Image (cartoon, rainbow over all chains, first blue to last red; front, side):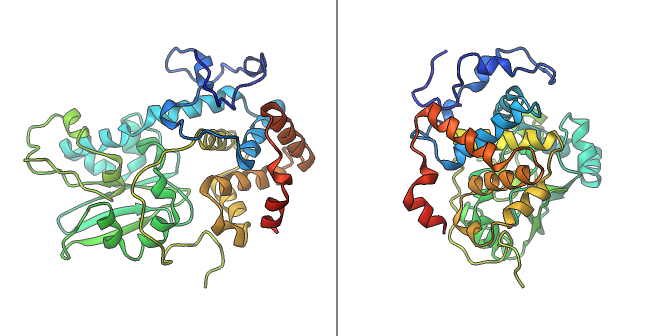
Length: 237
Length: 114
């Protein structure tokens, strides 16, 4: 296992293992030493650690010392950021496309329907909103970054940005255009503002030309951005 | 009437950068740490947002994860999980471990925080 030149999270020898806690649920076998390795895809942050980076790390270590949390729990969450993204959401929507009864259950109680498929939502409620020929839906959290993480993984940078949060509620068509999505004037746009207890999921319209596709193939058509509502699925002719 | 700094829905703003830049490594740590603290029922999303909103005018000039990290600090101090002195000592310890200059003590940064 190679250490990166800027592995600021390297601990003093022995420190890491002292805090190990194997009480958390294991769904697969792996080597815990890997947890502390930065994700190569995110290795654009070289340079000395900043004030807040040190503050965050210090708070974690203090809570570890006091026995409130463990390093392994945090490492496990970091690992899940990659594993969860973003397939649950695509699977749920693809199921809704092929199974009308499931779609009804999803629209009636999103949380329960997702649980059927093994996706446990973190918020109290999940509201699935369906795009139709007359209505397009898009989601935002104007106050912070509430987002259906269990379905879509971690929110993208733009979802947390001031520009998106400020503007999508009053000029959604202009914002959608910046994502390359142009909607006819005849289509109403509904913007849904999420909060800590209530998350949204957009169910896009199933594109023409996907008749007879398997659920798996349909899921492959769906991206995170479509399930947030800033783009729509298309099938190239 | 606007009363809290996070209530930015409806404000004019620039074009959306539609590229997902992901999270820096420390941001992943901060995010995972927050998840674990919430799962331990020490705090919740609403409480952290209230602490973020307490930043007032500082809110708009801070990056997302600076806001959330500051909010976490506020809440954990309020709940007595550690003291300011303990946090300062631990931060000094980590700086020393990585041999990083103490930016918090920089005269420029001090002036900027005023």
